[in-house]
Length: 196
Image (cartoon, rainbow, N blue to C red; front, top):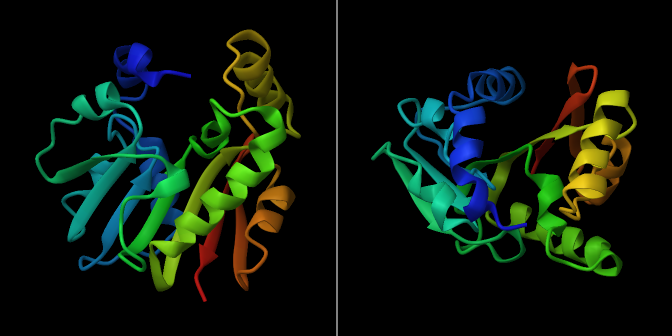
């Protein structure tokens, strides 16, 4: 999926990011000294709320057009994908992914999805400091709304998205001892992983 083509529409649909920001604040712990990375952050709707509250916020996204929509000078922008995050080991205090994890398989053949997600999991943890937090907000494909979203993305649009149930996502990060799942709505959940 080429998100460059739908950057304007995406920015219009998710221009304030308040709901997602509030959810992350409820689940995670944030400090003024934090360096934060949002992976798959698109137009920076969520990052914009964190920018005045922490030391630094960076949005990583493969779409140039999406990143161009970010006008806040306090938000750093970086082109790249989760498969090869362009930062050194243990750079960030908090890493989060909002409604983007399932897109990390876009552009890959289905037979490679599992391998690609394992690479992504390792990369997300690699750039996170020890005792840092990884927060992931995702749709639950076991719910009716989650099934409809998955059908729309894969059956109609043809994204090639891999949706994880809370249990499957916990298994992906099973090498981490501190994993908690929080349910925000009937079709949405947040997983919080504290790096050992």
